[in-house]
Image 1 (tube, rainbow, N blue to C red):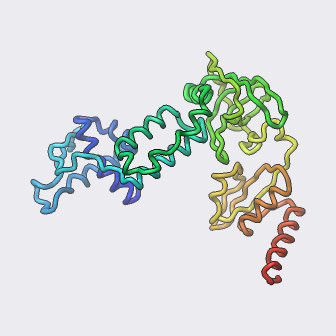
Image 2 (image 1 turned 120 degrees about the vertical axis):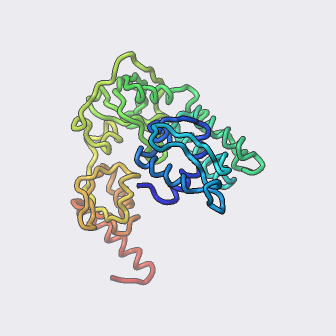
Image 3 (image 1 turned 45 degrees about the vertical axis):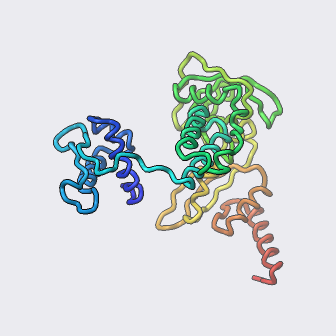
Length: 325
């Protein structure tokens, strides 16, 4: 169920929507408004009791939707236009769109640029100030060859894609045929996750390391989920087999970390206890610094050397403040 602020925003936008789509089918309206048909029915009943101060029948919004599969607005009570973004809201939205563009490949750059232009026109350059006059997105350069669009098309149409790809671990360029699975954003970079036929496993291909891409006229093979392996492992590509893994106990208040790092959940936490995750890492030094940043709320299970080093550094830090434990 949606929260009250979300529902209020939706209700405020619904009357202009139905005015712009007279006689729209309820099923279509529910899909376009992002709600279930049952929630749409509840929203319509709520709107039916809203209107201008006085709240007599002539002041209330009037809708024709009862015992029908369609919706019409017969009286809008003045709610004829969608709410306008404030300059602050527009600036935040513009920054978010530009951040997605800078990552390259996560969104359709043309569609995002059109959205940015519409927002700037709607709010006005003067109101937006420096946010509207910011330099063009770096995505214009990153996607100049159009490889990101080809890769997105491969994911969308479920077709295989041929890549000429630079492997940083091998310092070599190779040609790959990939069955795309999805696009991921990891640590500010965009990756194609797909089954590499040459490696016979799931790999992540960084967009900015794709030298060339070509959509193939053949369907992507469907690989069962148990063949996909660990998404953490696939990030490291051809180095995956030689890298160590660690099991981590993650306290609930920092469980968000699994959304920002490639950590596979091994066992969900119960009764407020920690969840258990497994992560591939590059070196003990990196893992030590990573765990220290969480102040004991993420603990390694089976790396005694790392655990001892974390304790030593924690004691040294306390000693710098004259605290001993």
